[in-house]
Amino acid sequence: MNTPRRPRLLLAIVLGVALLAGVLALTRPAPATPLRLVVLSDSLSEGMGQVTGLEKTWPHLVGARVRAERGESARDGGTWLPASVNGEMFGFRIGTAGAGAWAATAKVGIPGAIAGASVTWQTDGYDSAVVQVVAERAGQSFSASTGERRIDLTSPDAGPHSFTVDSLDDTLTVQGDGVVVGVLARAGSGSVDVYNLSWSGSSTNDWLGWLDRPALLPLIQAIQPDVIVLSLGGNDFWQSGDPDRFGAHLRRMHDQVAAVAPSASWVLGTQPVPDQTSAQDWTRFQQVTLDYAAELGAPTIDLAQQMPGASAAPQLYSWDRTHLTDAGHAFIAGLAEPAIDKAIR
Image (cartoon, rainbow, N blue to C red):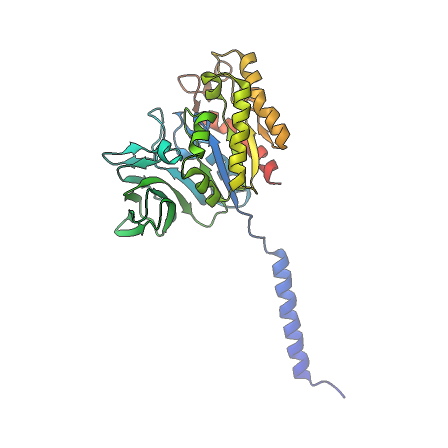
């Protein structure tokens, strides 16, 4: 007996739709795997010198390049905006603190933290922000204002807390009873978040102290980083010059951070040789970083060997011949991107 034509036609249509859906599923680009990049460093990465904007620092240049490779716009994704930078030798401003502000980095352990006043950021071009604050006790009040809107938070307990502000206007102002740490400003639907937590003048000794404060490790744990770049050593060389002490500090830093971010891959960086320093002494000290990276199986950004000094390449350095220019950060980004790419593959 023959099958009626209508059921045959319906069956053909159903099979055709299923086949088309399967083809589309196979050809549709897979969503990009999120990349959360954390940088723990000093002035080499924070941007002290003659750098014209936060986006010109090498961590954010790398973020922009990775986004471009993924077909995203350079500013899509997340950009960490600290409450302050360390010192006056910066060609750009990030947060503007109100009267009565005082530096709270040593208090909570997060570079750039501010207490005692409001902090305002320019947020034009961003869609939303995750605000990070630290309360000293339960019941402390914080607020975030953008345009005519205000979002409030009352801390449930002591410690770090976050809240999200959507539909940002041109500025975002955060204030409260505790400490204002910074914001992750987001634009579009990009897959790359860059947390440049670097602080000029810092050594491994400073970072170990901050890791013992109440907020840095919880922040890193909340970020769930995919890659952590650790680049220190210049200030350790100036302060102690003891390679064994520096090596022990690097190991302690790694172990404490890795305990809260066990899935993160690591990249270690050396620092370029200053003209006023013995190249032999400097590279011997920086070798500690390379040896530890080899022990970890971690890629390296070896600026001690690969970045020319101020005499050979003055365009990379600011007037003090130590800190960097836009060109200097672009040079580092060119070395850092393949190292970070290697870490995530």
